[in-house]
Image (tube, rainbow, N blue to C red):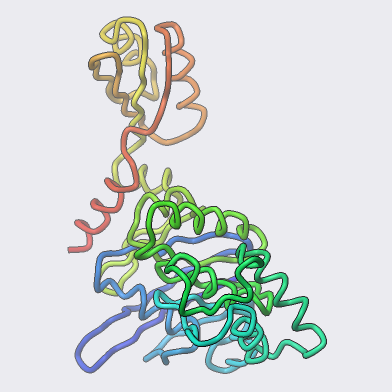
Length: 304
């Protein structure tokens, strides 16, 4: 678990993080979103003990990062945007080196290294020199060093930044495998990444928290209900008229082969009711009409 309470960090007159509070529950994947300069990286550096806070508290797995720094950092694995790796070492030697730094006992290190290399799909590359690897593999090496001591908490700063589409897909698949085993705080500027990987998101702007919750709850809070895009085979106008008569429906607008529906809230019951009615008109698909991008933009606009 990660607990952040009234966290602030100032650099002279610049307030980089301003009274920030949030909790990442055990086994949860939380996405930390925000525009450039929102305070994401500063927040992560404080969480990992790399930077002191001006005020506020951070607890990692129950340990205060200031008062019990060693215990807090022992429970945490950190992958910065630029992985801290030594180009001249082999993959296996570097991960073993990271295990030693993390205090893994000598007799346990071979098993710990093997596990980290297996999790990150680096077993076949264990003898290769890190400096000869592609960026995607270097990111995996960085993640291996963060995992080698089996931490309960993972902090990942832009883990797919600069990777090609194939490497991005592989890294995301790896993070999905880790969900549930570790509590993960994931900083990203890719909204699609937050949608596919995260249970909840926290949005920062100007160092302040401006919104936090699941995508559906944020959509309801910021956009006023849930928008559904229904693809149908039948008459869109007739379908829209039928849907508009339902109590949970605020608006139903016909289009070409589809109906855009706005619900009064995002409850599963109301969504199911709309879908059931639309099946009479040959419902092909039902998907959210407003994505995380609209939620993000509305949250940032509200912070100005």
